[in-house]
Image (cartoon, rainbow, N blue to C red; front, side):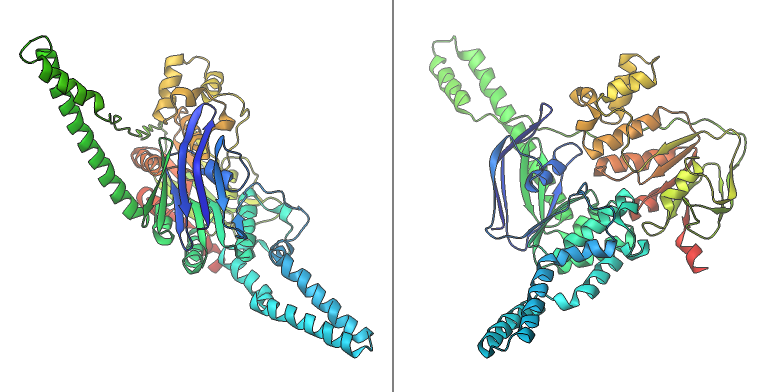
Length: 518
């Protein structure tokens, strides 16, 4: 047993996340944590990582178990280089190497033969330990992981402070993998990885000898790497054996069985109650009515089946344009101080759905920020049709005031909207009830993404520019977004690392990597 969780309870902003939930993780169990947005997946990860203290419950790790936790907000020395930071994964071994070197140096400094033998023995023990832990392969291991995750593209001598948030997370993940813990705890590790790097991580995790717990909304990824699912729903944590597809089948069967038994009980209760009502006052049948009443009273009442009706009803407003030729990009060079890429040229017609592809860090987000006017081009030009109206979805979650509620924020932006109209718009994005009135900072990543989609939906636009819009979204929300974009009559320019999403939405693909080949 690697991990035992008993009677875990947690309430966050008056919302019950877990109520006396219990589960355990065994050696070689590869665990995916799933559930709708806002049920407490990331909170569970933070509890296990020691970041959050639950209301009650016991969490017990196996003695001497080496646990690796991916903290996406970890404080890192901004001046340290990527290579130096990754080398820290071997800090304990480096200390032993220094101690061995110290012993070897002392051998040279003493003429005492017995002391030399003692020092040589001690040095030999450390050497064997270093070999057993592949210390002498340290540099090749660092390069293997850095290459696999695309970190080498940033330059191994680049300082950590110069990396974007997503790039930093990838480096932190790389260090965690290099530490080779017995149990890895990860929250959405594929969010900042492109297709090839997701494939590398899949291969790595398949070959990994320990156990892991992973929160992910990437169903294909979970299918590839997990053999256990922890499903969080209605305050309960249920464990299922098998991958994600097996979990869906088993859960559907359990739900169907429960609904069948519930409906049967409801019919039996109605039948008993009908007999009692008709016969309790008759002398000849009163005893039989009492008997049925006792049976009814002893019956263990089943709760009415709950459903998570979280499907979004997205309907992006469209403003017509005068020209079929929507965007022309001509020899555009993008970057902050220097060009990241060779000149970019392409055209988009009105109504086309363009997916921008390329490995992580190549400049996809920089291109989008240039198109919306947030960054100035280094060289070249781009021209939208004169009556273009842009709505932009930023990858990072930025809100001017995270202390107000979604309802308050929309009321401030659209003061002419009635309370009923605001609630209706939020409900289309599955933000309703108490969620609509709680501070934005208390919402999950997926719930904040839905709020951003709601803000875009309120704008009248003819081009949607979306940077990784599926990050943090649960399966139903992704499906809803996919359907909405497909029927949207306007132009869509988007970046996504999810193959299925690109395949179903894009009518045109522009791969930036081709610029580096030509």
